[in-house]
Length: 303
Image (tube, rainbow, N blue to C red; front, side, top):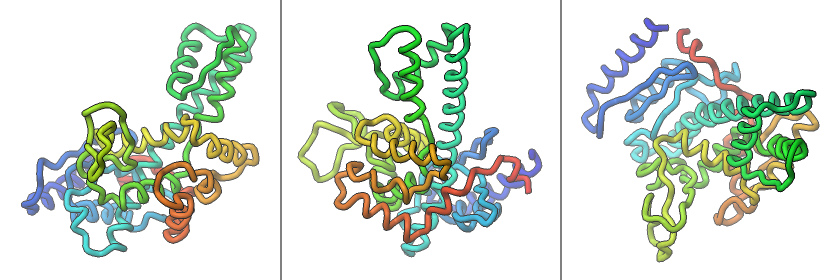
């Protein structure tokens, strides 16, 4: 792996050396789950994707290489071809949303371990109770009950809330909210979903609005923005119907697909005909195939 990575980044630095528009140093970080890349231009990013045969966001192998972009290429908005821009945006988003779902899957497994412990005669340890309480706070689960009944209720509600989001749905929402990654908020603060923070002067001030009571939340990277929005879908009362629909699919052992859950996104945005818009994006770009794919291991980058 070391030899491959060294060769990989030697090529990147060579390519980067010819770019005079860079607004900072090229950065990368190799982690067990993938390679995180930042401050690249479109040409370099496309070269990286091509080197690992990631030329289409729908892969025949159903495996997506774990190449994680921290922020959009600094010349992304300069792409003249709409089709090229849209395709590249989906390619950028796909490994990121899959990473978010991998992390949720790990958390869901932890939840089921806690549920199993709750059924045993010896009951939950103090550490396990704390873990449940922490998850309850994170996912806005509340009950006044005490003792074992309390944990029965919390764990049951968490089972509905801690679950993956169809990758295609997350991508479609990012498309709609960020105008294919070209929105000012994305460039200034990785704000793919334009999440609001109220009564603060921290964040991005909305353009062309008299309302000064909120700002657009900024994120250190694209992955953090996706994580935050996924958490919103999993805990916000406005998306309870989405979670019920997902639970129904789970009960019937169905693959979680964006097309099946998209009609529950009616209240997801002030954009007109929001569910219809998302459905169009899902259908036109055939994003349902992404729901059947998975993030490959970093060892795949050795090939």
